[in-house]
Amino acid sequence: TFTEKYFTMTEAEAVDYTKTRLSIFPADAELTCEEIGDGNLNYVFRIRDQKSGQSIIIKQAGPVARISDEFKVSPDRNRIESDILRLQGKLAEGFVPKVYHYDPIMNCCVMEDLSDFDILRTAFLKKRTFPKFADHISTFLVNTLLATSDLVLNHKEKKELVKSFINPELCEITEDLVYTEPFYPCPRNEVFDGTRAFVEEEIWNDKALALETAKLKFDFMTNAQSLLHGDLHTGSIFVTETETKVIDPEFAFYGPAGYDIGNVIANLLFAYVNGRHTLTNEAEREQFCGYILETIKQTIDLFKEKFISAYKREVTEQVASYEGFLDYYLQRIIEDTAAVCGLELCRRVIGLAKVKDVTEIKEPGSRAEAEIFCLKVGKTLILNRQQYSNGEDFIKTIVES
Ligand code: ADP
Ligand code: MG
Ligand code: MG
Ligand code: MG
Image (cartoon, rainbow, N blue to C red; front, side, top):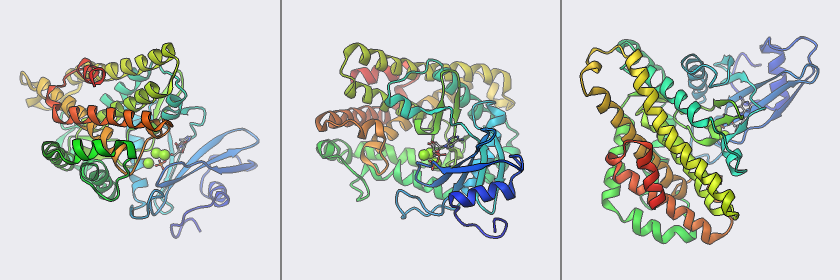
């Protein structure tokens, strides 16, 4: 039964679970279920009452990663996901799905069904644009990252939060896949033929780059600055014309604030390279790619603007009011943003986990060109991260690469 021991549910069992363990639907509901998960680690069931049309999502953590059973990941990450979704729902109201229930035995989270939304990566592949996205995501980032930091939180409460979001197995995946494997000839990497020579010469053969990635890895592991989402790519973001909702925070832990922002920017850049290499009509290409560049710029600049005003309103730490501290703190976040954006650009090209924006560029020459562009921008961002302080600085590197 559902109350004794964890097992991964089938669609029929998810219906049964809904009937016996949840009091969400009326007794005479006609429930149907579809497993719609596309991720690596989890099962996502959509349960619908055919009578009322009402629906919910049950996300259950699986015991191993689907991408490779080399990754053993504790289903306890579902607790972390449920807890942070609830917390983010308070800090950034309306920007995450509502959580109805968390079950520590079945390791599942019952939440709002966002099926009327589209996954941002998929929408970008169709070249759709979302004018309010930069405004929305910058609010989400400021609200979740500032309010969970020592700037605002009582330091003892913050340490309790750090403890409850210790996420060693998922952090290890990031430490390996993002910070380590892409930067040496690790057998688990998957390098596209046309890109290999560039990777060997410009990435694996560059000692200065290796050193910077080592410094960044230690920063990721030791700088418990803010409670991060931890996996904030465009596949973790749902959008409509008017709304933005962030899902899938199972990698959440206390790390450098720039990690989440850098992931958003890098994944916008993947949409940009996809547009560059798949849109043959010049006007359409300039329109879409121009939109993405503007969104990158705005995301960074709005983040800064909103961070500064929230800092002035909300900061409780005494020494944070010393002249120059805000500038110092924010500049560090933007440097980390640049560095992590660079790491993500490299690791999605070289490492095990790819993005469709790049792999769906079908012509091999174009794909190699797109990948080499990502690597050049990525490398520049990592090596010169101290030189970035606003959106325009990022745009310059992109258009000059
Ligand atoms: P994973 O951790 O395995 O990547 P995700 O949380 O990203 O799982 O969910 C996988 C997919 O399931 C999403 O891309 C989306 O299509 C669907 N999904 C997840 N959560 C919801 C939700 N609340 N409403 C509607 N669909 C969802
Ligand atoms: Mg996901
Ligand atoms: Mg997924
Ligand atoms: Mg996930």
